[in-house]
Length: 362
Image (cartoon, rainbow, N blue to C red):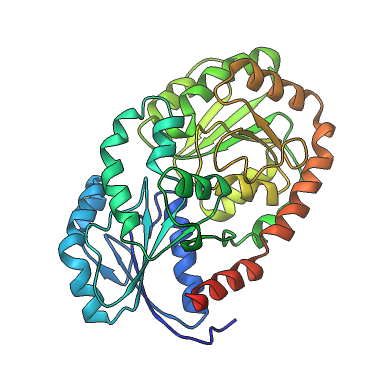
């Protein structure tokens, strides 16, 4: 669907191509969608974009440094490439817009905020030091796009953002390969797809799994991801009779196959900006067990399209996994309902049209 108003759009971001996480995947798909709609899109990134700056920040994993590079480079880039609209991810994993550029409008893309991370993720209190930069970046945005009702409420109630400038959009996701995936399941097979860090509840999962194995000797767990807590998972995988395996990365076709074969997708996160892996699992017909927290409760309808469990509650998670692996058929109606929900709410063309209409209304 071509836009009636072609814009010169710039996207400045640290995580892009190859993506390190869900944010990078979402931004890459956003750029492809905008080009498909006929817009002239250029990206300013440390790697994989049309224009590269600060490549060393990507190599060493120091993404805050990229924001300071932008302070001196983004205006020259906007002027030289004649960008009239700048999109930038804000909040954890995003960048800071430390000076409002001249000659173009700015849109902040927010999946979740530092305020949510400080409140909901254990041990993340120290990230208060980033609140100043986040608030300053939001003030420099003419509009804000977000993808979860929880995040929209925080932006308006905690950060004081004007509701008329905060737009809640459906997430664009290429779900067709997931919807078409085989639904044949491997008995007892569970999967977790995540960056291995504190926010994702990885340590909690490694504490729950040995208890699950006591009750379900035939159960197995595949963890797909890498990160600072990969060693915790690797130590669990080396334990006897725990049936745990970790792989750092799977190609998309391999990931779709693995997720679609799992009886359960486990998402014990303390916070999510949206929950792309949960959405994909729902599309693939895999029953989701997720934390009842921001980002996930906007996506999963408890008892209808999956289960929302108390955050960090060992007994509740162990009991739920045990019961669902014991009675596989209990989740059949939910799997069907989840697929139907995904088809209706996250139709790709409808999401793209919503984005296009939103941009044309600015």
